Amino acid sequence: MPLAGKGMLLTSMDIDPDDEGDFNRWYDREHLIERVAIDGFLEARRYIAHRGSPKYLCLYSTETFEVLDSPAYRKALTTPTEWSKTNLARFKNMIRTIARITVSHGQGRGAVLGIIRLRPAAGSHDRLRASLRDQLDPEQRDGIISMHLIESDPALSKPLTNDPPVSDPGAGDWFVLIDATNVNAVSEAMAALAFEGGIKVSSGSYNLMWDLARSDIRLS
Image (cartoon, rainbow, N blue to C red; front, side):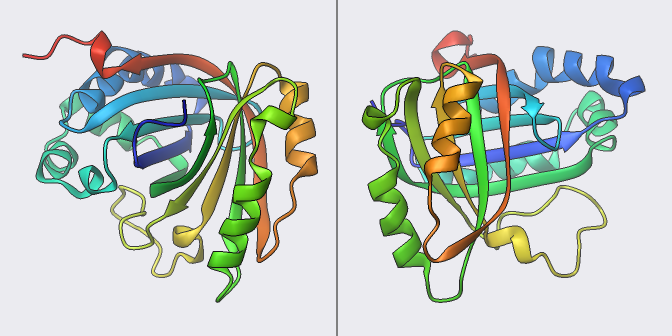
């Protein structure tokens, strides 16, 4: 089935090699569990780049878009653990996007994720969305499990750092997500897409590290 939720948080970052061991332990033993336990969160998926930048990527699905501006989520942001503070300070080249899931076709998740970052042209949002809705059809592509479009909210999409940029033209960017069984299928699908009403900013392919559903954790 298509993605169950209506909201998505996308985070991506680089980490210095000397810090990667602790960073991955924190993500795997604390951070994903902490986030998925927030009311309204459905699942989280961690990825590592096959060909792309930044190196690490995480997707969090939520029941509604509003969950990503809820008191429960804001409390988690403003009361990080000491382990979180240490690792958040290590993030480099961070992307943080709070988005609406506006197109979602297919069933299930793939072992490989293709991601395309798009910047809609002024006044062309409806045209770009309509074009992608027609193209994001996994049934026509071998090895493709599901295809999705997420549209960033410019006001909420910003890095969690003390020195955000004064102006971030990418805060309103969109992302095409392609769940696939293999890298070759991702490459073929990305090459076939056209972006009428927008420009491609970047693209990459990522391997799934692991995923966590809300039903997997014990809630107190």
